Image (cartoon, rainbow, N blue to C red):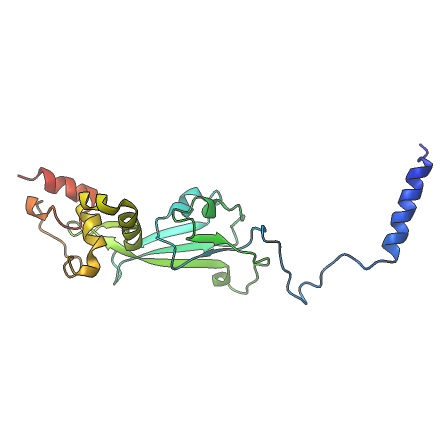
Length: 203
């Protein structure tokens, strides 16, 4: 099949233009590459804005975010580890973040490292324990965030109310496991839903 004359001239023009112009390339890795603002690069946790709710781990399609509650640690803590070698940079963690700022995708282009720890993004949040059974309830930052969002309605839940006013020294000294049987007098204390129900139904 013969190429039309006009198309031949256009191809010839592009060939000469490419011959006498510089190559459209970058000098990476000799010079750092600056990605576009909309580029989905390496996710990073924000220590100030992350509340440790774990929503990012729930929606991650690659399941590359591990969440572990260490209730026996001193102090109790919830740890997050995001494995960058499994991350597909889809942006779901950023999209469904509860605070919309706890984890953000950066413009970091290259994931380079020499050991497994170089491909891990970590975060840790203090964990609130039940005064009845000693089990994990939620990270402290998550309860405080919830109290700020609820405003006066936070007084409807004793756990949220007590955590919200811990700076006013309303809360006692630390978490102490209670008696084996539930007591109604312990309703105004930091309890998990199961222990709160048992205390409310106690005679």
